[in-house]
Every structure is written in C-alpha cells, then in structure tokens.
Image 1: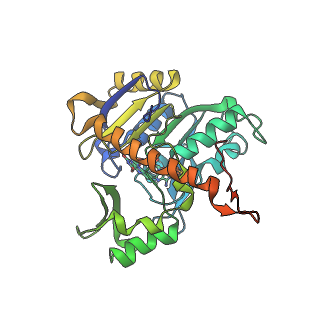
Image 2: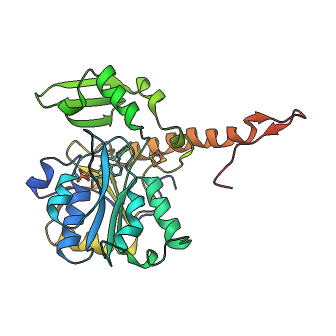
Image 3: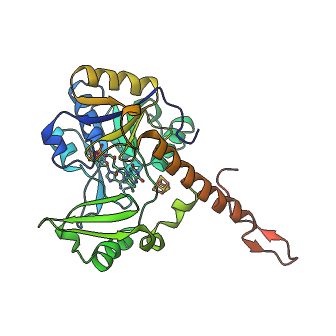
Length: 292
Ligand SMILES: Cc1cc2nc3c(=O)[nH]c(=O)nc-3n(C[C@H](O)[C@H](O)[C@H](O)COP(=O)(O)OP(=O)(O)OC[C@H]3O[C@@H](n4cnc5c(N)ncnc54)[C@H](O)[C@@H]3O)c2cc1C
Ligand code: SF4
C-alpha cells in the first residue's frame, strides 16, 4: 500500500524531442498536459511556471503548449499550485482544469473536491490531476544556500537540479556538475515535510517520478478511471514510448523501498508529536496531529 492504488505501472518517456530537451525526466507531465489540451480533455493546466528569481516557481494557468514548455523541470522549492485552483474556474474561465503537484497538493485537491469549503464550482471542474513523486521539499532560501554555498554555483548559472542516488546535483550552463551528499541538505528541508506520509502521489489520476527507471525515463502509475482513459488515448496517439516496468532496472523494488523509508521515518515523527511537551502535572502535552 505504500505505492497507493493503481491500475498499471510502466516506464515511459515522451516521443517529442522538443519536450524532452528540457524536461526533468521522461517529460510525462508536459506531454500528457499538451495532449490533453490538444484533445480538449482540459482547457488549461496549473503548473509551476518561471517566477521572479532564478529557480523560484510561480504557479500559472497554462492554456498553450508554449506555457507548458516554459514550466518544464523540477524546482526543488515550494510552488503553491493549489492557490490558483479557484481562480482557474473564475477569471480564467476554465471548465476542465488540469493541475500538477506534489503528493500534499494532490491531497489538498481531493480534499477540496470532497469538502469544498469556499470552493464553489471547483469539485466538478477538475479534469486531470498529475502527481509527482516527492521525498521532501525546501524553502527558497534553503535551496539557494544548498546551490550557492554548498555547491558553489550561482542560481542563475544552474540549468538543472536533481536529487538521486543519495546526492543533490546541480548542472551548470557551462557543462559543469556540482554534487553534495544528501546528508548536507537535511537541515534545509521544509519542516512540514517531516509529517508527510505519501511518496508517490497516491491520490493523483496519474503519478510520475524519476525513481525506478533509467535517466531520461519516468516511472508512471496510472491510478484512476480518468487517468486510465487519458493515458490510453495518449499512448494510442503515439505520445509515449513505454516499457513494462518489470523489464527496467531498478524498477518498482526501489520505489517501494524509498516509499517505505519515507513513511516509516515520518510516521515516527507524527507519533513523537503526541508526547512532545510536558504539562504542569508532568504528563505529556501533544502537538496537533492532522491525521486524527
Ligand atoms: C520538491 C520535489 C521533490 C521531488 N522528489 C522526487 C523524488 O524523491 N523521487 C522522484 O522520483 N521524483 C521526485 N520528484 C519528481 C521529479 O523531479 C519530476 O518532477 C517528475 O519526474 C516529472 O518529470 P517530467 O519529466 O515528467 O516533468 P516535466 O515535463 O519536466 O514537467 C515538470 C512539471 O513539474 C512541475 N513542477 C516543477 N517544480 C514543481 C514544484 N516545486 N511543485 C509543483 N510542481 C512543480 C512543473 O510545473 C512541470 O509542469 C520531485 C519533484 C519535486 C518538485
Ligand atoms: S514531502 Fe510531502 S509535504 Fe513536503 S512537499 Fe513533498 S509531498 Fe508536500
């Protein structure tokens, strides 16, 4: 269950070289939204577009392929994509909304659909939710410190950042690569991530990440009826090259291991909050547990 419910899992990458040129992994997010936009399955998608500072994402409602392309790549810092969900159905006038986000953002989305507090019209207008895998995230200042102080790369000189194989890697415009072990990045993690119990976006229609497949490919879980319908149409239309996940290394075994590690570690943090403080009478005082 650490990988959530899914109908199928595959290794995949976009067949569009233009998309792959700057996508993080197999370009699954950008390709699937571009296809859904073309086919009228969505009329726009909330993505993490370029922001005011280098590597600072700014949520945008993309209604063209060019805007989707501009949002490619992972920004390892918070992009509050859910903040636009209501506005997408208001001033943007969307009836079929796409959204990409981390597991916590997929949870926020499903909660808004089931318990729409201040979210009139939103629940029925969600057409395609693509979730990305996420081990942890970083505040912008923390990311800047990791890149500029630890990796000694100027934020504006970085062309790609990546977390994998125990390292945080920064690729530069001049072809350089600077890496630090992940143990140096732990103190910059967003503290709220330490109570997060979802690694592979269990609540998305389709979820995707890099872990499990070779460089340039993505691991894809097709989870819901909606996700299955869109994915099958996109594959039929030739948008993706796919391989059975069982045929690629390291495959689902590594995804399962990392998901288990994350959930086990964070479950302990959740439990420790129950006896975090001490009351005047000496008994334990709990910090709030949002799961209770
Ligand atoms: C904070 C974070 C941690 C991650 N950790 C892991 C991990 O541990 N293991 C793993 O396998 N994969 C992880 N990923 C996912 C991975 O880095 C890729 O985003 C994913 O594989 C999609 O690649 P793609 O080539 O399909 O997407 P692309 O076609 O390159 O598109 C990427 C999409 O992600 C969106 N995006 C970028 N940054 C953010 C953000 N900060 N918040 C919300 N949306 C964003 C962009 O809007 C864009 O639409 C993480 C991603 C993030 C943002
Ligand atoms: S670790 Fe969890 S809470 Fe933190 S950004 Fe990722 S999904 Fe959200």
